[in-house]
Amino acid sequence: MIVKVNQIASVREADTFAEVDIAGFVVGDSPAARVLDLTTYDDLRRRMAGAVCVHLLGVDDAQAAGLVASLAPDYVEFTVVDPEKRTASLAQLDAVSRAGVPAVANGLFLLKDDLSLLDRSDHLDALVAAGVAYLQVEVDSLTDPENRISTKDRARIAEFCARYPVLLTDVCDKPVPDVNQRGTFLNLGGAGDPGHDHSQRRFSAAAAVRTIRGLPGT
Image 1 (cartoon, helix red, strand yellow):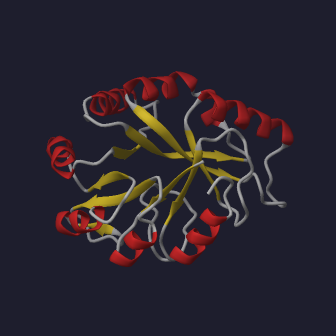
Image 2 (image 1 turned 90 degrees about the horizontal axis):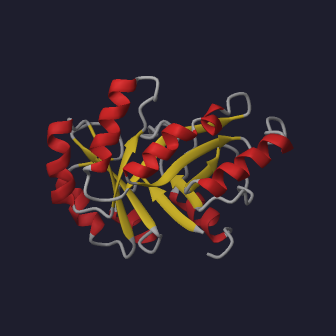
Image 3 (image 1 turned 180 degrees about the horizontal axis):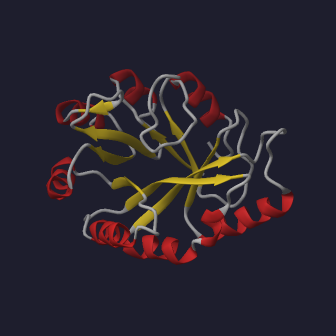
């Protein structure tokens, strides 16, 4: 199972998660928590043994291509534009196709009362065709006994994860069951820290370590 740890922001965190499959960093011109400047990113990425993924924040399209080249990540991460915003969505697909490295698409959600992502195969196929290697999806919830997605819809999610390269996390503090996902992602941060992929779930470094140790095959 692939493990991706996002929003790494300190030497201690970089050393703790140096061996994960994919280490995620948020880089850009922003005062927000867990956003790194170029020097800090360079210092931290040298500590990683696995692949590195960069999510650019506060960077316009004109700067993005040059930054990706200079940062030299293994993956570039972005938040998916709503496909109903056709012009913006097509522009994003074009940018992804020209990024020069595989991409990770975030900002994707499966909710008990909104499973519309499962019906967007045309857009998801286009994302994969453009160069998206992983879809980062937060689900609410496969494990919460008070808000659990039905067995029927869980089967649909399993079909979805079998078709697409999904990294899955759940808002509930319980292990995510096997629904054919390629792996999982964990966003580091405290209660007051933002989720730069708009997800709800945050992990302290200690909680992330416990979660990773409990995953099959890790």
